[in-house]
Image (tube, rainbow, N blue to C red; front, top):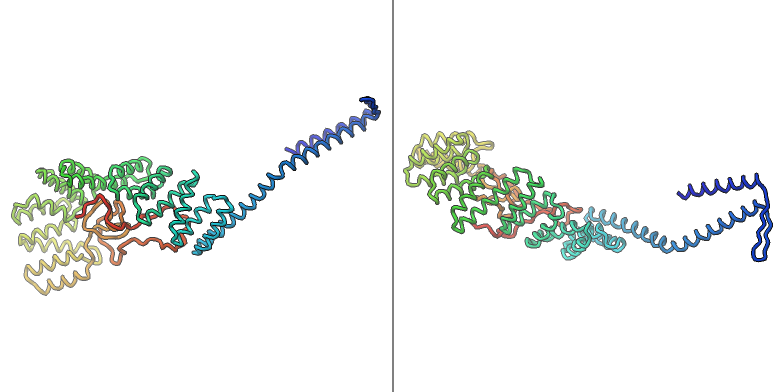
Length: 468
């Protein structure tokens, strides 16, 4: 813009000079007894000189007035450049595992950049690597002072609370962070686990509903989570003696969690307690089609407790027909047949179960059942001993295994007793050599600004869940 103005002025001067050269004349000025007699060209030149002089003086005055501000801006630019360089050096030191050097650069950057978010975050990460939780929390707390960095501060404070096992503070930070970033899947899962640990099932259901509406939780996962909560609510109602409400909640849980036998077994057991034997049998038969399990077979036999072994074997045969190819169907019928001394039927079903076992072969339970069969009929002690020896090196029997920490459990529930993970238990054969607890990143690892602090291993069984 200034260049355009200068070009216009120069053009105006040239036009004026050409005009005066083509039209010479004289100018006479009388003022307070003074008389000036000159040519028009000289007057024009004098006028332009005065204008240029005044313009120069105005620019000089403006420059002098702006000098302090310019000096401050230059100084701020130098500090910003030095602060950015300190942040870069701190990140490099953090990546190299030099927490002390990273902390030193973070302090320098914080002083140069007037507590900008990035140096504070760098200082917090460096303090975490040194194990200085007080300094880390102080840095994260300072991030809460600015709206643009509040979520970073909450994320860090949430991670520190989880690491120290302070679930109450962690839930508070997770709730505030979830309000700021409701579309973060890891945050939704963390909040669900913390609410479930506290036994606050209504709040857990509300979080699941919000996550499903925002599509943060996949549809099937949201249904499964909701079924897990309803199952725990059913158990609570049963403990309080409200069997009718407990049965209703268990029925809903069974519909939402068809891959797990526990809700169906609970539902059937509650129906039997209410005297509703036929719906109880139907509930077990429906569950057996998708999740055959020994607990379902036991509940099914509870309805035939007064019957003899042959009647019980016939009942389990009917149940097995709901899913005839499942190994658990063969095992259930074989056990009932052995109890009724139907040795041929037991051998046929156990043979089918052994043949259907995936590599590396039948599980320990199957091997022990075969040993029991051989010991009973035809009384082959050598064959029975062979099966017992084989059981020692056989694959483990299926059980509920946590997908997060690989802990094994004989009972399914919404929370893993080992790590406190929410809805992480699934029925399958555990892997040999699987760690008992999920490995967390070591404190000295060069972790740079992790987006999702992991849930720690729970120190004790969470509240709100009854021990078996």
